[in-house]
Length: 316
Image (cartoon, rainbow, N blue to C red):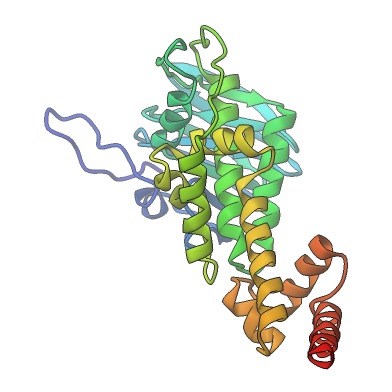
């Protein structure tokens, strides 16, 4: 089977986008992240199928095809090279953007991670002014990469969970880690030298604190925080950790907990309302995170604060 496609001027095949590939392939994914509203990496999970004979024009994105389990004999053709092998559980294929491809044989259970080149480019920009800006992702027919496997399994685990506001931050972080690993492990050009990440200034940190405290009632993404200080989200993650000693996700949660403590101490709002005001998904999630940070449940903290208020009233 050959995927139908339009052509560019000059008769060159049009590159298939992340959206186009759904219509071009005869097999639809059994599960996908496309309806989750995630940014960064797109994940399609495909069931095993047999006797395939397919060819496709190049894609406008990079693909990592990770096989969680099973085995299948597959013939791959890319860049004028033919590779035949048994793809076993834990093995990945890396296909850079722009490669025509042909596939024959069997496909086991496979997770297809579709990575926009812009994600890789953004990671490359953070190598610093003394590092190479040349990026060319290598073609790999069969590779066993423990780091790639752990990141793939982390994304697959999130796909199994029901949607949650915290997933936006988690997927953002995993996507950044995956792009950084691709750049380190599969870039044909090596970085010249390590680049020392500077720290954020006091004014930049103050702007971040203000922004977070003004938006605690909703999900706050890494991209938003990066925009506050005018850097990419890749650069922001490293800058923030270097400047504060902890991650931006942990910082946002600490702000939520501090606001919750203040509301419990100073108001008579129900705990369920305080949970929503401070951006937690529900009261159960609020209780778990509050207990982890403060050492007691919100209800116990409220009783302590209530006793203190009563004592102050009696003294007055």
